[in-house]
Image 1 (tube, rainbow, N blue to C red):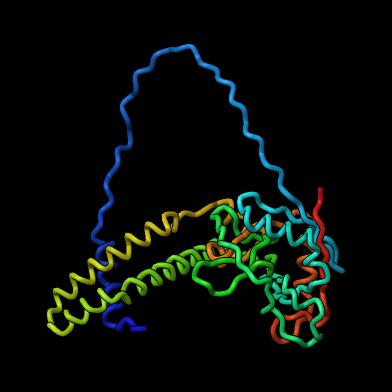
Image 2: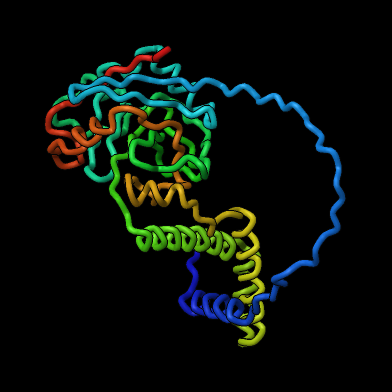
Length: 301
């Protein structure tokens, strides 16, 4: 795989910066002419509210207490898969095999049930993935239930491994930095993918050999516009800030840097203190708790 030269990256960044500086805000009127009004009798319409689908609850029992988890209807594939596995008693006696204080507690590795006390865990799976159901309104606040995954480009989830966010609190300045970093990484990914296509590589190579620096600059400027357009299309709400989410991260805590990368499909409604107790347990290298922490699950009616 070919790499972008330092010269070309610097050129793209310079072009992007100069383009942004040259844009001027379009002034908007501050007042509007008064609209003519006419008095009409109000029309009353009876609107029947759609019946909200009942959310399934799951009880997770550990030696440190019990958590009640609500599964989101907005993520039906993950919800239904989790319900299926709980019904099959799949999770009973499995371990919370990876625990990182101020981050998360993870479980669901089927090999953990009979694993040796020193075995490295986390690679066990059920043999299938679940398509990503990432939703901007379902986020990694403390107590969020989310699906673990490997580095597959589709962000598809493990069929069985999950984590529950422990997290920490953040300042608004830290949250802004996380948002900016996420947007920059996403844009760089699009830039690299665009630059590494055969057509772009061929065009850039030809212009470099010709020695026409002005033509190369114009080509890079147009390439930057293509990247900007693709970014706006793939991440239309990249710079939107949800004040409710920010408030949760500031006051309750969570792991905001995971937003947009993993599917959140539920949340702990009761038993947040259980997450604290598990997250504070001593661990060995590899983040496995020194003492086994087993779980048992059942569906609540």
